[in-house]
Image (cartoon, rainbow, N blue to C red; front, side, top):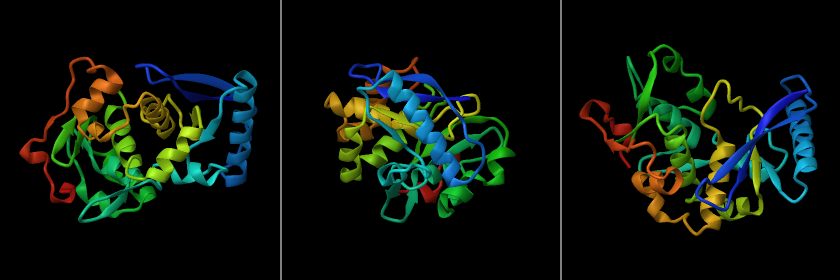
Length: 234
């Protein structure tokens, strides 16, 4: 047996709740094994919540929609380049001893996540993206903002995800990671159903207020000169 969180969209300012669900686990790294785990997890969740529709969001999803919504595949397009949410997230990290590493934007999603500098530059201290810095608190603030704003540039995907109420990412382990694409999708569905998923959310402060209620006094500030890099120009 194993357990994974399921992120459920809520119709109020909490945006989502996460419920840990136990399910029969199938070992192995093959796609077929991951999809067996997804099916097992979803069956267990539906047994608890038969009225909710659940979607796996990852490259292993059995549904094309879930694959397209993966941060590895969801694209951000600028005047200069196009890159995935995953690549942008990794390229935006600022550490005690380096970063952001703007050249990561030229890498694939998988290579971006594996860039050795992400593990050799000391503790993570924040994020810097398009000449604006983001704090580590509230947790998942930058990732959710990045993912949701990317999703809103793909109207067909944004509309299709509203058919679901709950979301999983079979590879997400909350003991090792904070940010999760399934959580971001749940937040988006909550905001959309409350009529709040608008262009105003491009402003990080508006997003912070809508999702986190202001967030412990932490607000995104303009990037310091040492954090700026031409790779992040829109």
